[in-house]
Amino acid sequence: MPKPAAEAREPLPGLPELSRLFKSLSDMNRLKILLLLAHRGEMHVSAIGEHLGQSQPAVSHHLTQLKSAGLIDFRRDGKFNYYGLSEAGLHPLFEQFFGDETSWKLQLAGIEVALRRR
Image (cartoon, rainbow, N blue to C red; front, side, top):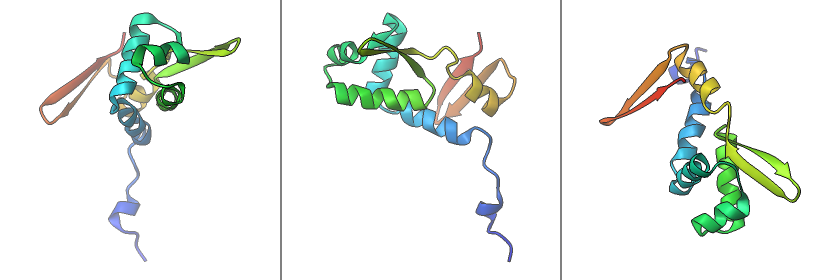
């Protein structure tokens, strides 16, 4: 018996990872955390929570989402985990999804997202 067309198609390489990335970026608090880390560098959970006015468990949840999307890394120092933007960042994901291009553009409903490799 032949497979239905939807099951027969192979997913695009990197599509699940790209979906996780956009899901992570869809939350305003996670975007605030990324901007905060971009401007201030490494921070521990308590400091991020104080800056955002959120509890430690809420911030930890957001950090877990950002870490699973490959956007941030952490290092442990004593009792604290310090979080910062990932050195590798999105490079492997976008290289897998978009190939060896030096810049990528994604257009959605009149909005263009452009990324450029440094």
